[in-house]
Image 1 (tube, rainbow, N blue to C red):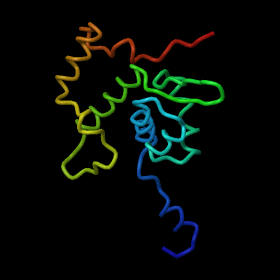
Image 2 (image 1 turned 45 degrees about the horizontal axis):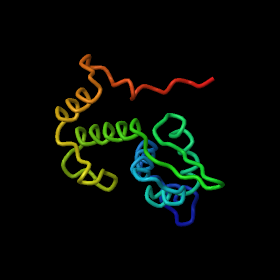
Image 3 (image 1 turned 135 degrees about the vertical axis):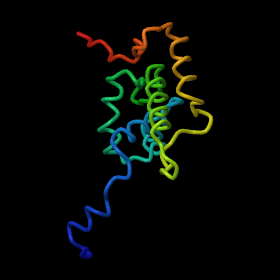
Length: 143
C-alpha cells in the first residue's frame, strides 16, 4: 500500500459496522428520549450517517419523533424495542467464540435463550402460529 494513495485512504476508512449494525445502534441510543445530537453520540455515528438512517427508522415505526417548538427528540417504540431484541437474539445465536463484542447489547438486555425469548413474544402477543407478531410487520401506509 502506498502512503497517500487513494486506495490507501479507502482501506483505512472502511466501516467497522454494517448498515444494519448502525441502525441497531440508533435503536439502542433512543431507549430513553434523546435529542438528535445525543443519538448521534450514543450511536457513535457522524451527523451525515444519522440523518441518512433516522428518517427511515422513524418511517418504519421503530422510533417516535417528538417535536416541541423547534426542537426534536426521539424515543424507541414498542415495535422498535421488539426489533432490537430480535436483532440481538440473532447476533447472540450466530456468534462464535472470539467474535468482536464491540457493538453488542448491554448485559441487562441480554436474552437468556431463544426459547425464553420466543415464549415471551408468544405470551405477550398471544400468537401460537409461529409467525412473527403483528407489531413486527411493516406499518400500514398512511394515505
